[in-house]
Length: 73
Image (cartoon, rainbow, N blue to C red; front, side, top):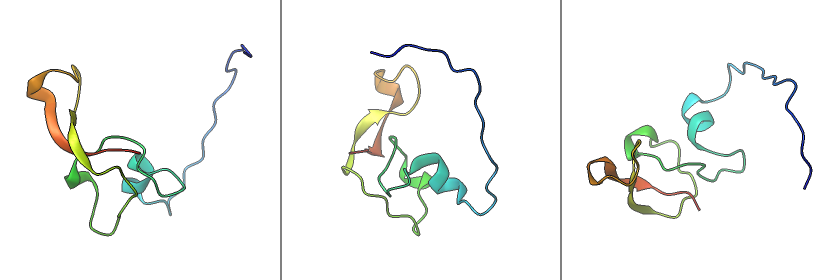
């Protein structure tokens, strides 16, 4: 195992990037996180594992937080 410290973090603004895709979809087109259907426009059809019951926000396992969400693979 290699241990170390992050000394610097850089990012570039990309105005051409789709803000929905950038927030939810990996560059290979697969879904990167559990996502409510409303967050994925019809134009965006990510590869996902389908729908399932998952927590939307902390506490994730509390029944009041559970929703039917797109699930990542």
